[in-house]
Length: 78
Image (cartoon, rainbow, N blue to C red; front, side, top):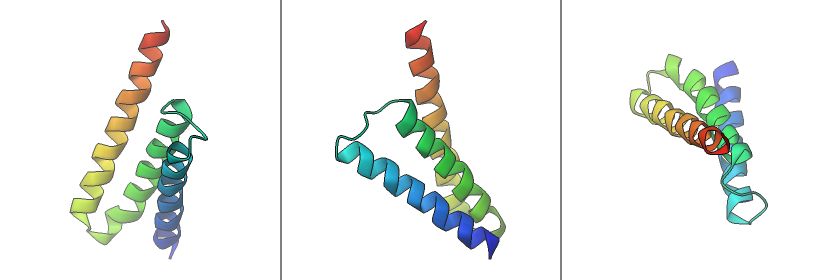
């Protein structure tokens, strides 16, 4: 039950990030990438016990991309 709730929360975060970006409410910046990272972590936690390995791998990769994007933004500011 808790994993299903986490999955729904993660899905909402992904859709929220995409909606905000697509409607011009936010730019591809810290907020967008942080929402993606949080969603990937939450969805990864929800997927792990369900043995949905291809989806779990997707979330790991999604999170790594978000982390790399945040890292690049931090490096550009220095």
